[in-house]
Image (cartoon, rainbow, N blue to C red; front, side):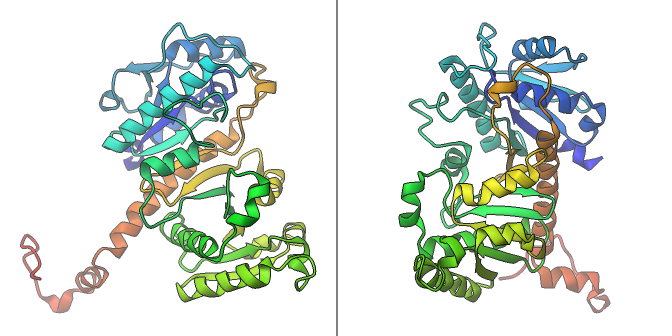
Length: 366
């Protein structure tokens, strides 16, 4: 029953999209609240509106004023959006953007204070959420500002089962990609990816495939020299840091031949290189995970899906999987922290310590 106490903060995303639909459909299964304590940051009135439009069964929500009041075996919701907020299904509106930001801001504040354990974000519209406090291309960059390590790079990972695709460059124009593909950037991303696979996914010796930037991996410089001058040296440098990295592989043959099955992670050079094949393979239940943060954040791999909003045809599979991944990572981080804390001392006592009993209430001597 320990997992039930994992408090999952859920942002409602764009209220004109499919966010509430996938949230409601996920929690129609009463067994989900046996796995965690969900806390939705949004509006019970807007949730009710979506339920009626979608003609879904009743989903009872426990309205609370703070995360501290969240109850077990209940779907808890904190009203952080004005009840008069207008929903216009399928439309991008400034009001929807404001509602997205208020939900995210409230959840991030509670995450900062430790009032929730993990964050699960429903899709936002990256354009209408922009305001004086949110000048970012998306969730990833905003959360990096809030929770990023001083030393670690933040890494976007799209995942389904054992397929995990990370990006060297994320939400940047394609024209800017070549200038951002540097040896240092690739090494930093490989190091974070490797650490994440070990710490968050419990893989002891991860194998990471690195994709090429140019077609046919540059064809020995005929189609570009970045592989020879940047990517291969970066792989060699990462190996010195204990990273098992291989490549660079031409992206088309790599995905077309399912070579990814031989690896624990794939590092792509830019957004569409990694995400286009990933979403073709795993769109329905893919998960977006933000690695390199001090906190845990997941989201479904799809967007607001304005075109099907309000039609009761959106699948909740991706959102549900994002919830499961958040819980798994929370457990894995806790386990990793336990086994890496004073490992020799822990092993000593597990083996009996020569039958010597020590007073563990005393602090260790320096």
